[in-house]
Structure formats: C-alpha cells, structure tokens
Length: 544
Image 1 (cartoon, rainbow, N blue to C red):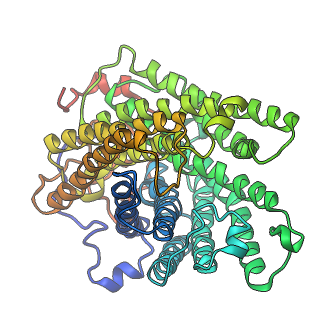
Image 2 (cartoon, rainbow, N blue to C red; image 1 turned 30 degrees about the horizontal axis):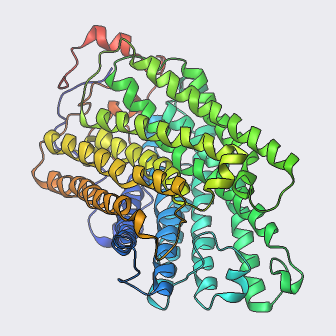
C-alpha cells in the first residue's frame, strides 16, 4: 500500500541525464510531458495576451485602441492559439503523457519515439502559427469559414491552416499511443474495471482524436487547395458549397470540445474520490459515460448550423441529439455529487479547483441546453451568449480541471510541495475572476450584442467594463500558480511519495519517479479507489 515516507535521494527521471540534448532527444514519457508543459504554457500566455487586447478594445464602445482589421486578426489569433495549441493538447499531452503509463503499471508509452515525434509536430505547428502571426496574421476567425477564407481574405489563411494541419497529426499520434498503451501494456491484475477514471477519460479522448482529427485536417487542406488552385469546393462563385465546409468542420470541432473537456473530467474524478476518501459512486457508469460522450459527440455537429438553412426536420433531430449528449455528462456530475455525500472532505487546493470545476462546468452545460433548443439558439447565435457558454465549458471546465490536476500531481512531477496558502488563494481568485469575466457576457448576448464586433452601442458598456475587470483578476489567478510552482522547484519542501494518502499506482513509486517508473512491475490485487481499506490502515495526513 501507499506510504507517506520521503524517499531518499536517488536517480529519477529529472536527474537521470543532464543537458539540453538529453531532453530534446528523450523518449521518456515524463520528460516529454514536461516539454509539452513548457510549450503549452508559452502558448497559453500568448493567447492570453490577445485576449487582453480584445478586452481592452471592448472597454469603450468606440473602436479606439486598434483598427477594425487589426481587431479581426487579434480575435482570430486568440481563438486559433487557444483552441488548437492550448485547450486541445493541454491535459492529454501534459498530465496524460506523464501519468497514463504509471497509472497502469507500464514502463513507458507503447511507442516512445512516436511520442517524441508528436511533440516535435506540435512545436512545428506552433512555429508556423507564430510565423503567420508575425507576417500579417489571419482574420477569418478560428473557424476559417468560406467563402471569406477561400476568396475574400488577403491574410495568411494557408499558413494558418498548415499550422493547424501539422498540429492535428500531433493529436493523432498521441491518441494512437494512448490506445495501444492501454490495450497492451497494463500491469498484471490491472483489468478494465480497475482502470483509473483518468485513464478511461483519456482513452475515450484518444478515440475522438483518431476518428475526428483527420476530418478537419482534410477540410483545411481543401480550403488551401481552393484558395491556391481556385477549385470549386466551398466557394459558391466556383460552384462550391460553403455549407459543406461547415458540416466537415463541425463534424470534428464539436467532438473536439470533448477532446478538451473529457481529460479534465478524468482529473476531477481522481480529485473527488481522493479528497472525499470514498470510491467513486457508480464507478462503471462514470467510466462508460466517457466512452458514451466520445461516441455521441459525433452525432450533434449540426446544432452549430441551426441558422445555416437546414430543414426543420434535420433541426429537430439534431436538437434532440444535442439534449441527449448531455446525459453522460449529467451522469458524471450526479455521481461526483453522490461521491461527496457523507464523504470525509478535505479542502485542499486540488479539491477547491474540483469544486470550481463543478460550478463552472454545470453552468456551461446548462446554458448549452438553451443552445440545443431551436428557438433560443436562433436568437442568441453569434452573440456573446455563445462566447460565455463556450468559455464556461472550455476555460472554466478545462482549466479548472488542468490546474486541479497540476496541484494534485505536482509533488509527483517535481518531487516538491507547493505553498498551500497561495494555492488556495489562486483557486479562489480564478473562480471569482472567471465569473466576473464571463457571466456578464451571457447578459450581453441575450440583450443582442454580437460577437466579434469592434464597436458596440453605449448601453452595453457597463457589462463590458465588468468583463474586462474580471479578466484582470483572472490573469492574476493564472499567474500565481506559475510563480509558486517555479519557486517550489528550488525552495519547496521535499514531497513524500504519497502526500495525499491517495489510491493508485502512481502514488506507489517515488517522487519524482525513476526513469522506468517502477523498480519492479507491480501486480494489482485490489479494486480501483480502495479508500475504505486505506482509511482503516492509515490516518489521512492532509489538512482539513
């Protein structure tokens, strides 16, 4: 069982080899996870910088900070960077890469060199989007809708599409690696009904990566071919159909929402079961709901197109499916709540982020039901209601889960503890700042303020001022963890192997883990989340 003793100084993945070359050519999944951590953090702050420019522009009704064309490029770069270079890769590539093999008792991922290649493809795609940004940018919005993207825009559409195309192959390779690893490299006794829910979530995510990403890759290639060779694919002037693009794009991009949120759901399952000291209520339902979300996510793409001219009958079908896809997510939320019921809850930093996730994700999910209803969707399409809903799911959900997971596993990743006071403060600031930023946008959208507009009527200013003020608070909340995580690497207390007295194989190896994770391959003889057994044997060493 897990121990709370501090491991003596020994070889681990951080000090096994030194030098830049040893990191750039590593095939250790844990080091590759840290390479991803550095990369996605840089893109997060770059995307955040563009968000700051957007909020500063919207502080006043008049477009007095930048020109209209510049504003178009700013919100486009914000969307492309945040969606394709942060939200999609962040949890699978960082936490998934680091933890998946350890959680199932494997020495590494199935294809270590392909894992390194996936990071290089991500970096190449990132460099391409940086080149695009520095040489004129792109102004189509992150959705690349034709015919604007194929004919009218004079910006770097092909270069931006190429960047998305290359980064998409990074996702495909990561998904392939995860699926093969889970199928072929589980430790003896690690049956499917003993897999951690974080593994289930990333497994389901990998299915979406492999099946969905090629569709958007092909779609972007078709845009580039039409733009350069003037083929009639999407542009009606050339005999094409712009609605075809929307069908292809959203067939991937709605499941991409689940690429972003499913891994964070897996994180929340780990946090809630640990800090309530109980096995997850309805473990099998929570596990299978991840697979159900991945499958049903491919059936609801056209609810993004209710105003695009589809038939009433098609609209009704996709409306029903959009309501239905909420059921597996609701199963998770209700089962998490049931897990908390009568649990021995510890209000640590990771648990505060888990509570924040529950609040923000539930708000985002409930407002999604409004968008599944045909009548309401027609009213709020392309308004700030959509922006608020999207950010409650993607930023509120994904980032709360990611930050909760980083605080939970940081002692295992770094071998050091972070300052608990500052962690709790950052969780509070992020939650308050987020709601102050995005809740006013629900009201703005319902009142009719369109998204992506450079100017707006003066009666909307007070809500925009609140939103910009909230963004400032939110930025402080996001900066704090970066500061004290870096500080903890040098000054933090050495971390025990299992500081939370948590269940799971990752807590049965040293902090930080050795290069091959375990000195001997573990044999699993216990059920997942055996907290009843742990509670009987040891006193919980966490702050209450």
